[in-house]
Image (cartoon, rainbow, N blue to C red; front, side):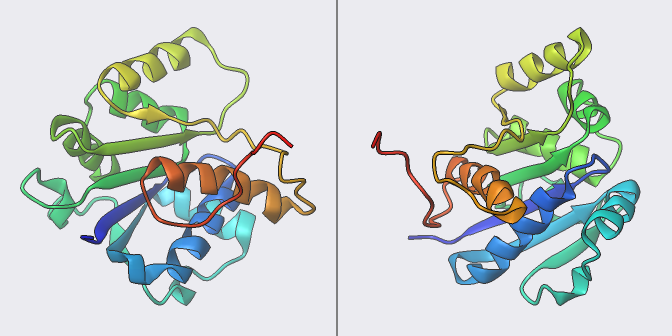
Length: 188
């Protein structure tokens, strides 16, 4: 089986525990991937630092790209990156993606994923939603992307905040076709 190249876009929305959990899981399963790339928006990096107190450089198997680096390999449709996960996805980034406003590396990469019919997953973090948010989600869905709100499940009876975040990240990784074992509801 061919290993996939995956990109994680991290925006300035609150909910960086989801991004941290995603990076932890990908780093732990790095052998399944040819590359794990991360793009932070400037605000995304600030909020990640504030909410997680984690050093991004601790991830040994992750490449970090600047959000203004439009020469990154995945900014072109001729690259072979298969999945972009934007986690957490701010409503501003969602709007840029939904309307084709590819002004930075995350929104350009999302544009590439949609035009090349590859996987785009946006993990939105906003409540309540206004009509503009809903229409942007509809637009992304109609274009072939997946909107997966950060809505934890409780079937697995999570005990900690990290366990709760993991329920969202495992769902997203399942949507990305990553082969990472996760809890499955069996109705019992």
